[in-house]
Image 1 (tube, rainbow over the protein chains, first blue to last red):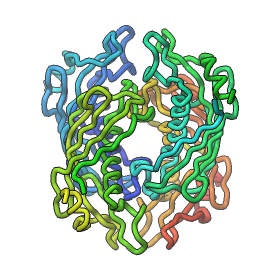
Image 2: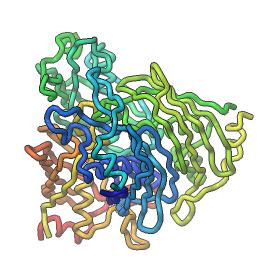
Image 3: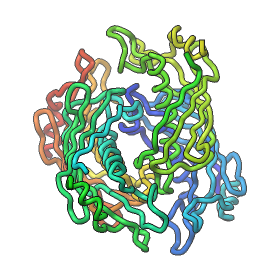
Image 4: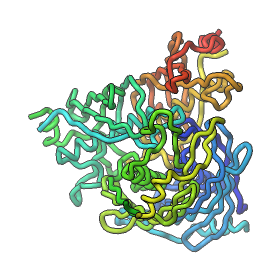
Length: 140
Length: 140
Length: 140
Length: 140
C-alpha cells in the first residue's frame, strides 16, 4: 500500500528533437507510462491487457494536466519519475509528478486521469474506481 | 480511377531527432498516412471512422515493407509522397513509394498492407479486398 | 498583424491509441505544430529551417502548459486549433488554445514557449523576442 | 566480444493504435533502440551523449531496412529483440533482427545503419567505423 511510486528509464533517441533534447510530448508520455506501471504494481489492470475473461475493459484517459519544464534532458540520460497521489476522486485520480534527471529536476506538474470503461455503445464512459484501488492509492 | 496517388505535407518539428533531421520512423509513418489518404480519395473507409452503421470495421495493418533512405529531410521542408500500385492481391495491396524533398528523393521502397476486419473474437483477421477497391487500384 | 491564428488538420491513424481515440501527447503536439505555423505565417523563422546565413538559430521550447481534455477525437476527424496570444513577455510567449472537433471542443488550455538561441557552449539559452515579432503578436 | 545482442522491453500504451495493437513505426523504433543499447553495451558512444570532450559526435542514421510483421503485439506484452550482425562494412553495419513476443515472433527483418560524423558544414557525413567497434561486432 503506497501513495508514492518511482519509475525509472532513460531517454531514447527517437524521443529527442532537432534542438538536441527530449521533446516535451515524449516527456509527458513518460508520466503516463509511469502511471500505468504504478497501476500494474498495485495489481490493477489497464485495458484488456490483463483483464479477466468477461470483465469490462478499464481505461485511464488523461483529463487534464499541468506541467513546468525546468531543465532539458538529453539522449541516454537516466530519469526518475516520481508520482505522488494528490487526490483520489470517485472516478478519477490526480497525481503530482516530478521528473528528475542526472543533475536536476527536468519537469514537475500534475495529471488527472479518469477511470473509464467501454460501454455497449462502443464509447468509453467514466466509472467508479475499483474499490480496492481507492484504498491502495490512499496509502491505506 | 487511378493507380497512382500523390500526397503532400511538410516535416514537423516533433518528427525531427537530435541529428537535426526527420526520424526514420516518422518518415515511414507518412507513407501509411499517404495510403490512408489514397483510400479516402478512392471513397474507401479506413476503420470505423466512416463505416456505415452495422458494417464491419476494416483495417489495413502493415504486413511488410522495404525502404532505402537516400537523403536527409529537415524541419519545414515540403515533401511529396508518390504511391504507385505494384500489386493488388486478394487480401493485400503492395505499393511502391517515393518520397521527394525540395532538392532530391528522400526515400523509396515498397509497403504491403493487408485488408482486415474485426472478427467476433475481437481479433483482426484478413478478409478479401472490397470488390470496388480492387478495380479502382488496378486503374480500371 | 494578428493576435489570433487558426490552424486546421485531421487526426492521423498513428496518433490514435488502443482506446480508439487520439492520444493526449499527439493532441498536445498539434498545439506546438500550430504555433510553428503561426510563427511562419508571421514571417518568423523557427530553427535553422529558414534562418538567413550567419544568423543564430532560434528555438521555441515549451516552458509550461496546462490543458483540459474535454472530448475524445477520432481518426480522420477534422480539427481546428485556435491560438490566441495571452501574454507577450520579453523572452516568452503565452498562448491560449482551443481545439475544436466536428461536434465539440476537444481540448483547451494554455502554453508558454521561450525564445532561445544556440550559444557558443552548444546549449540553448533564452534570448529576447525578435522585436518585429513582439509587435506582431500584440496585434499592432 | 559478441555478434549477438538481446534487448528486452514491454510495449507501452502510447505505442498502440486504434486497432488495439502496436503500431508498426513504434515496433521499428524499438529495433533502433536495441541497436543503441548494443552499441552502449560494446562501450561505444552514440551522439554527444557520452563523447569525450573535443571528440566529433557520431551518429547512426538508418540507411535501409526490410521487415515482415508476423503477429500483432499488445499493450504490456514483453518483447525480446534479438540482433545479429549480418555484415560489418567499412562505414555501415547491417543487423538481422527478430522480435519475439510472449507466444510467437512479432517481426523479423534487417536494418543497415551508417556511421556518420558532424562535419564542419553542419552536415552529417559517413565516416569509417571506429576500429574497435569493427572487431567487436565481428565477434573477435
